[in-house]
Length: 258
Image (tube, rainbow, N blue to C red):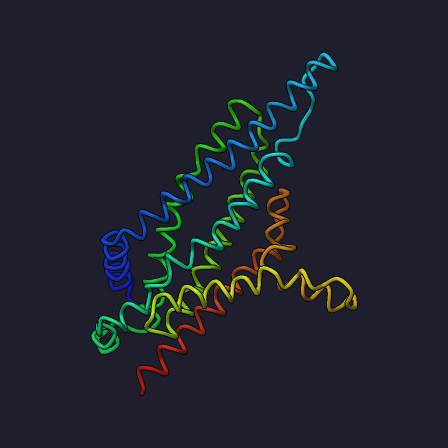
């Protein structure tokens, strides 16, 4: 595996992302929705604080973690469910549609380098999305004395959740040359793993525990939003990412030998 070739692929992909309006639209939508949800939660927090001050004569000890951070970043997770397929849909589908896939597949670049290059570039675009939300912890620290630990684990959760969605999106994009189909397929797979924990009620405890563990959010993401940094959650997300990158590699390998 050649680091220089991976860097060249990452640069190529980043140029491709920002040469089209899709990345800018996704960034703008994510920033606007983040600002809206944060404003709503902060306004409600301020209103309740003033109400308690008026009727009790003191500012209440409202927990910003439970009242602002957890619901805000839970909402951002749902937004990612809708927006991330737009980021990943072009990963391989565009190469197939434009006929440039053959040039890459027959080049000295290995399949592992191709998969990693495209994955890293998509992650960098996602990092730009998260960077647009950094005003949230700054404002919370200035005006609401936010818990730094919960904010840190919330961002760790967002990073892993986004990386998982990118790995799924890349796999879906490798299966088709139609970007819309790739986006819909990505959304469908993510929605399945998002909602699988919802059917855990009314089944045996063993099945319920398994479904809850497989779910993207029921245990792992919620733990991180609560400030709980458990290595089992990290291992789960890393395994999920590796599994779908491996599937993507296998799909590309099967196409190379056709």
